[in-house]
Length: 161
Image (cartoon, rainbow, N blue to C red; front, top):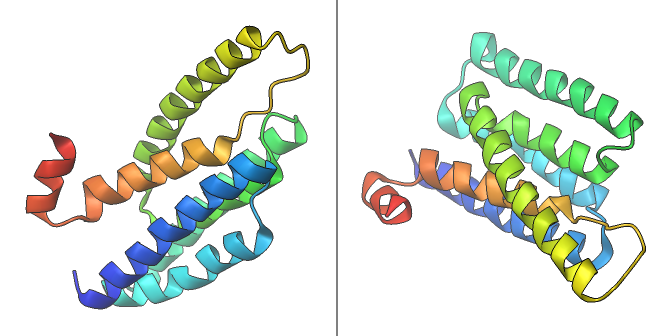
């Protein structure tokens, strides 16, 4: 992996942290942030040396499939629109197998976050609906996936330990 790839991955990690922070503060992930993530994916493809066929076509297919499924969940009011767009934009960056890792870690982090918020709600005796900032879980899944799959070997051992 070259310097440009690492720079782009650092920018993606920062974007994920911004998404998590804004979702905590405002329960919203901005469109400009999702667009920036999506629009910088081709630079990452180029830095990785991906061929248009089949590599880039597969990335586009995974992103399109993810968006279709997640848009259905949005229609059912299970997910927020910013979450759908963020996950679809991430699918442009991450190959299918690693994307499945992201979804698994995201689901675990989201479940943990939901349980924490339920306890917080009960402790404060609130009766309103719990608003889970799922951008935090997406960011955890994304950062975990980037760390496990893209950090150099020595750094990977430190993350896994």
